[in-house]
Structures are given as C-alpha cells and as structure tokens.
Image 1 (cartoon, rainbow, N blue to C red):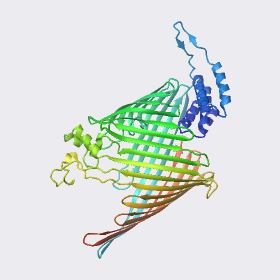
Image 2 (image 1 turned 120 degrees about the horizontal axis):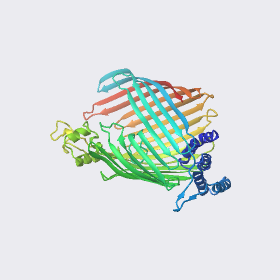
Image 3 (image 1 turned 90 degrees about the vertical axis):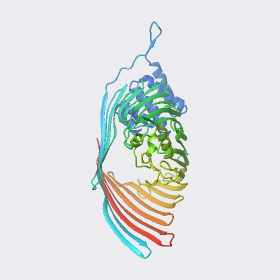
Image 4 (image 1 turned 60 degrees about the horizontal axis):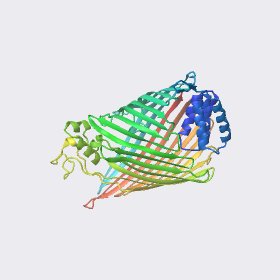
Length: 567
C-alpha cells in the first residue's frame, strides 16, 4: 500500500497498479477495501477508462456500504458520461476507440548480498564397555564458506505493455578440504504482459507456481485472461534440478477461474517424461475462498499413471476481532516424495538409467516407485488470542505420521545382502521400513510488543513432542529491537532436551546474537555470533548382561559477517 501510494504521487500509475494488485492478491485484510479503490483511481489516471469503470463497479459490488461508496458512485457516473462514442459501421460492427499508448517508463533494481560463515567444534567422548573405558577428543573446523546472492530486475512498461528481465543467482564457495563449492541459478527469464488484451508470456528459467509443475524449470509459460474471471495457461519445459542424473520434460495446461472473486481456483493436467518413459501424468487443482473473516483453500493432485492420490491438503483460518481469537487448521496427506517413476530407485545405490538399461519395464518401474514411496499425514489445529495491543498468545496441536514400506527388489524372503541368493543388483534391494507411528506436538507461543524496549518484538515458544521412540521439550525466546535509527539487534536463546529408547538422553543449549547497521539507505552490514553446548549419553545392556555406556560433550562456536547492497 505504501509503495502504491508513493508511485501514484510520483505519476507512475502502472507501478502503483502493480503494488495495489499485490495487496488484492492477499487474503482479505484491513487494506483490501482501500486497495480496490486506489487501483481504480490508478487505472483511470493511466488512461484505462474502461478498466477503471470495471474496478469501480467491483468496489461497489464488494463494499456497497463502504466508507467511499458514495464518492465512487459519483465518480463512476462521470466516467460513464465521458466514455468515447462507439463508431457504427455498415455491417453493425462495433469498434471501440483504442486508448493511445503512453511513453514507456524504465526501471532497474536489485540486490547483492555476501556473507562469510565459519564454525568450529570440540567434542570429548567417553565409551565404557564392562570395565574397559576409552576416551576420545576431536577438534575441527566444520564450516568455512562464502555465500553470495544476486537479484536483478529490469522493467519497461506503459499503459499496455509490461516487460521484465529477471536474474537470480546463488553461489557458495566452500573452503573446507575435500568439499565442493556450489552454484544455483534461481531465475533467468524474460516476461511480457499485455494489460489490455490480458495475456502474458514468460521464457527462460523460472519457478513452477501451480499447474502441477514440481520445481524450477527451463521453458515457456503463457496465460490468457478472458471474460473477466477466467484465465487459461500453458507451460512446457524441463525441470532444472538434476535428480539422480535425470531432468524430466513436461507439458501442461491449466484453467483459472474466479480470479477476482472471493471464490475461485484452478484445474490442471500435466504430462512428464524421462528417458523415454512417462514419469508423471497428473490431474489436479485448487479451490479457495477468501474474505475478511474466513478463508479456506484446498489442493489436490491425482496421478493417473500410478492410479494413486499424490496429495490432498485443506487449510483455513477464521479471524476474530483485534482483541478476539483467531483459529486455524490444516489437514495434509501426501506421497513423500511426490510420486514419479524415478522413485523406483529410492533407497538404493543404483541409478534410474541403470535400471532401464538392465531391462526394467515401465510396469516394473511403476511397481517399485509405489513400493518405495511413503505416505505422510499431518493434522494441525491452532488458535491465537489477541489479549491486548501489547500481547498475543497462541496454541497449536499437531499430529504427524509416516507409513511403512515393504521389502522390494531381490528375493523377498531374504534380507538385502549381496551374499544372499536371489539378490538382483540392477533392480536394487530395499529392506522393509516400519511405520513411524504418531508423533504428537503441542506448541505454546506468546508474542509481546515493547516488552524490553519501546519498539521491540519478543517471542516465547515452548514445544512438547512425543513419538514412539522419543520425547522432547524445547524452549526458545527471541527479541528484535531497533536500538537507534541505524542499528538493530536480534537475540535468541534455545534450550532443548530429548530422551529416546532404549536409554539415551540429549541436552542442548544455544544462545545467538545478531547486529545490523544501516551504513546507507541502500546498504546494510550485519554480523552474527552463536554458541552451542550439547551433552549426549546412552546406556545399553546386551543379552549377556554386559553394560555399555557412551557419553559425549560437544561445544561449537560459529560466526558470520557480511552485508547487503540494494540498487
């Protein structure tokens, strides 16, 4: 809202429209009504009279008793009277007068951040077996790296066209012996949008948002909006993440509906191939409803190749008043990882291409992929109570579990040992995995404004988690404060304890402090320093009543420093 207002005052109507659109794309909130009004004003100032009329009409439909409804109706009447006349041709063909394009505006912006990280640890351990005791001490540097993020965007836009060039890259130089450096190109694409005809095209490396695309890809995506509330999209490309030395190709189509309404959603179909096999063929979509008090969204993905449900999620929230109680919930059931034919090598040391070369058929690969892909379930319900202007308190209950996996590959009557008859290396061999059982977590959280300093934010969190194998308790307190105009300070203190079967315990204590200094309006320097103390102990008694114990104490210190430059 602030950026939109500044752009409008500066005469940059189209930048203002984009900012107000971002507000309108959020769940309904206290700014939604104002954003609907100001996007109509911005479109009128940009020369898009017809679209301004649509936006003003939308305001009156959504907020008939809004505080600006009378002014909007008067403005709408004046705009309708000033609409250009329609030219009537001999064949009764109606040709509207096209608005003259404005001059292109140009902008370039981005950021570069660079940080150096170093950490070292000291571990002292004692192992006792019967009457024999062995001690060991290890000191090492476990982290030494330099990480950089570069983000750049260039725009050229007027009342009809919006062109963007986007580049995002990440690089990590690892200075530890034997460790490799890494680089990740997050985005490198060109995008063009037509504001009047309502179509868009994006080409290059981009992220898959919806439409069944699973991650970053290199390709083309395009969309065309029609009938105000509908949009059809197509996408084609190749996934850019190299998983098990394979990068699948895919083609997909989707349809969005209710794009400007409280109720809306989308449906899609996608087909994905790898090494000559169909990797994934799925249908799915989402359905959502948003208003100022209640919102709910559901997502579904069904793979017709595997004839199995990949994912179904339902989540929502009910907002109370500023001094009331908010409620939220989430139900999630999904394959982990998402089903595709490459999951046939999960848990093995073989590669997908090796299985194909060894003669595995599509049916074999589908069978192994289903057998080697677990199902995870999660249910959560929570509440946040706004006690007053200073304090909020909340509670979350969560239950999760993961299904077990059967033995697959090799001889199903023997363990996955290469010495056993019937072991077939080319198809891999995976021993059965038991189900995790239910893991229960209850979280208590409290947030305070101005607890220690007048402008600080303090968070308290207490988590209790219990599963079949372990019980843990974790406490964390963090504080963010603006010390002066250019200084900020973040402090965090974490304390946790865990006990596991058969007889092991672990305790961890970790304080961290981070300071930031705004050197200039577009340059920030910051540094972080942290300590971590951990103590672990376990005791085991074997069948011959011999007791073995192990105790380890670890101390770790780490720091980082660097900065961010915005241009």
